[in-house]
Image 1 (cartoon, rainbow, N blue to C red):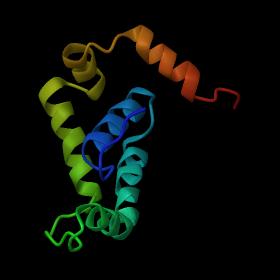
Image 2 (tube, rainbow, N blue to C red):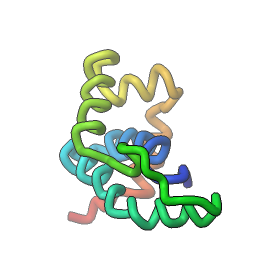
Image 3 (tube, one colour):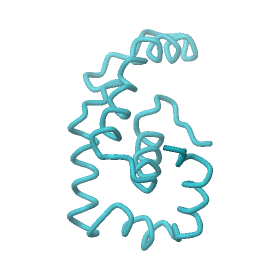
Length: 110
C-alpha cells in the first residue's frame, strides 16, 4: 500500500511504475493518473478543513494533466532505456518482485 496527500505525486509515480512493470499500456497508465483530478475539489475541501483555512488556490493544485505522466514515462525511457530498466537499476526491483506482482495482480484467465 502506498499513498500521499493528493494521490498525484508520490502515489502517481509509484502507481505508474507498478502498472508499467505489470505490462499495462502507457495510454492506460496515463489515463489512470489523470483520473486523480476528479478528486481535486474534494481534496481541497479536506485540506482546508484540516488546516482550518481557505481552500488551496495555487494554480496547479490537484491538477493531473495526462501530458505530465506521459512526459515522466518518456523521460525515464529516454534516460534509462525503459521504465523496467530504471526500476531494476535504481530501485532494486528484480524479476522475483515483478513475478510476485504479476501473480497477485494480473488475471491470466483470458
